[in-house]
Amino acid sequence: MPQGDTITLKCGYNNTITNPFVQRMLDEEGLVNPVDVRLGEQTTDEMCIATMGIVF
Image 1 (tube, rainbow, N blue to C red):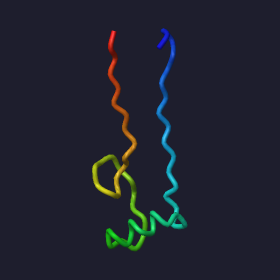
Image 2: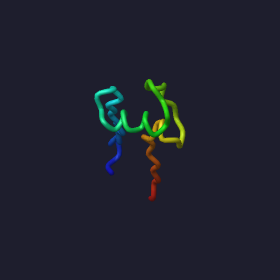
Image 3: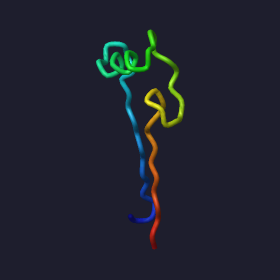
Image 4: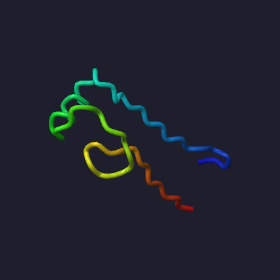
């Protein structure tokens, strides 16, 4: 990459109840309503993480 270039990570989520995957997760987790999303490794946690390395 040339000097001055930037890398951007952008994640988008559809955490609405109309999303069938949200409905399925709620059923699998035994939840009635959506929960706040936080960083972690569980099904209900934030999963957008990038790890990068630089080699010269």
